[in-house]
Amino acid sequence: MFHYWRCILTMFLTAGACPALADSNALPLVELRWFEMRTAHFNIYSCGNPRDVYALAMSLEQFSDAYTLLGGAKQVASPPIIVMAFPDQESVKPFLPLYQGQPGNVSGFFKRGSDENLIVLALPGTNSISTAMDIIFHEYAHLLFRRNAWIWPLWLSEGMAEIYSTFESDGRNVLIARPIAHHLSLLAREPLWPLAELFAVTPDSSQYNERERQGMFYAESWLLTHFLTAGDIPAYKMRFQQFTPLLRQGQVPEQAFTNALQTALPVMDAELARYLQRGRFAPIRLLLPANVASATALNSREITPVETFFLLGNELLRIDRLNEAESYFRQAQRRAPASPLPYEGLALLAARREKHAEALSELEEALTRGSISFLAHYLHAQEKYRLTADSQGGYSPLKQQELAALRGELRKSIALMPNFAPAHQLLGFLEMVQCEDLALAEQELQLAIQLEPDNPSYLLSLAQVQLRNKNAAAARRTLEPLLLPNVESTLRAHAREMLEEIGRERPGP
Image (cartoon, rainbow, N blue to C red; front, side):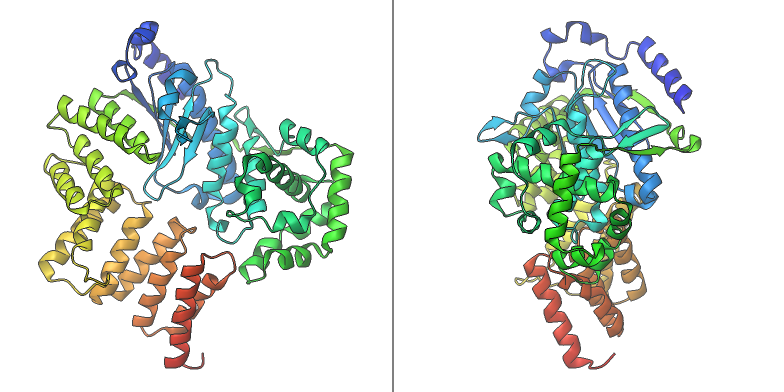
């Protein structure tokens, strides 16, 4: 509620939540007064100006509301997204990913993960939206598109993300697909690639990874996607809606494209050139219902120094600056030895370094100190279960005492974070191995797939459960999407092997 938010913000400001900002240049970042603003989908942490953080929270929630309107509430379901909002560009530099040993030249970034999605940016310094938000909206859109991530070709994934990167809202009115000046500037200087060349670009292609060519790939992907979703020929926009269903049926992208649009690629090359030459790129306009636009409540609190050290260390861990992350966790441990947070951080670090015994030891310390982290309970179960595997990585049914302990940890994790797909997946896998409650195993795996649809490896576990439940037809249906050309080759090979085994043992439907 806009007025409710304004009321909370006023109280927060008058309470003096960030008085140290006046002389922030004289203090290390960790010594400033950090606070949390929590919304329905975001946990925002900052020591910057609360008014700027409030504007950021509003913008992020409006983006989420707009996508909910288009794609449904299930599309935005995920563990809360952590947002680290640094007060200015200088303070964010030590927390940026490294490129050739130096912090990247970016204002912000989005880091995706199964257990945590992370936004890091510098606040703009005014109530306007920072240019970093273009990057944030682009990457957040990738999270929201995850149900199509492993079937969409790369040009569509990046083109759609660019369409959403231009998001703008006043709280009720939303604009997306606005013209992007730097793309149009490049397209004015460089000839368009033939669509066959654009369609051939994959994540391993030099055209995608080499910086000097990346701009043209993004620019033309944006142009084509804009033409197909907001362009001047209604018939193409209507036909394009069939593209994704044809991909799901197993058609390769070029075939699905020409079949959906009922047009050959050379004709589309000419249409795209015409659209660019025309030079009019109308945005897509949406109106948020009043009850959607005002439904978000916000809670604020000051966080403790140990939380600050943990959050900064965790941010560094997520971008693989592991030694610096460890320094923050160790400082947190010295500051607050009774807190579970330093041990949670050290456990995450040990797990990343594949030091599993050390990770388990740190997790037990965290749980002994009263950890209420869904991730700590999940990792504790995962690491303990890992120790029961044989030398080939196979698992056998556990004794009841061990089983009860693992079930208990996973259920605690799920109770703390119901939308955490890996905990549902591991519980489903555990129940499958035990073979005591295959219905529960299938239920948990189905939920994991629903929550994390861009992780097709979950389908293999579900198919195994269905086979144990003597439902070969269901297992075939589960495995068939893994044969699509965009699926990772090893996963596709496993699915093909399972289907061949089903065919040998259970011929016919």
